[in-house]
Length: 154
Image (cartoon, rainbow, N blue to C red; front, top):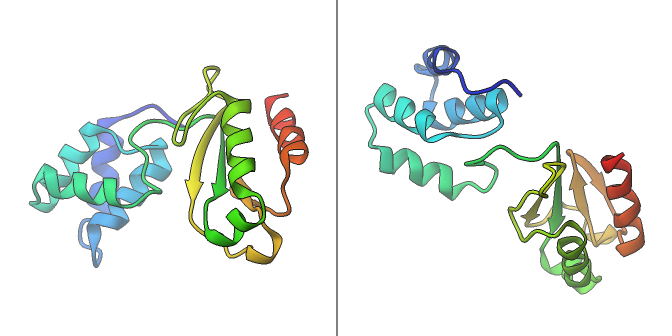
């Protein structure tokens, strides 16, 4: 991901400023470009769309997929929905947090993995489920999760 560049952010905002429902479109484009929504981006979007910073902040904080800080090199999203919980999702989540040494939303000290909760991936018959860098994974257990984390660490 490129580092924050105000000029590039302004280009993105201008490109999408006249789209229908431009706020979400612009925020998604900024996150794709920079990997997160910085405070500077919130100010630029608010000014460009004649919104308050609080309104833009509310949108960013409401949608879980928006990040306020850069993610790690890999993102692991563990399903927290009921079907996955009934198939051992709680134990898997505790194992994942312990293994990575982070809580929800945290990034490992070496910046390799960010752990995020997600609520239903539509893989209920294959739970516990997860996404690792957008790749769906099912029937996870502690051993398989460890192997996957070993792979991304190498």
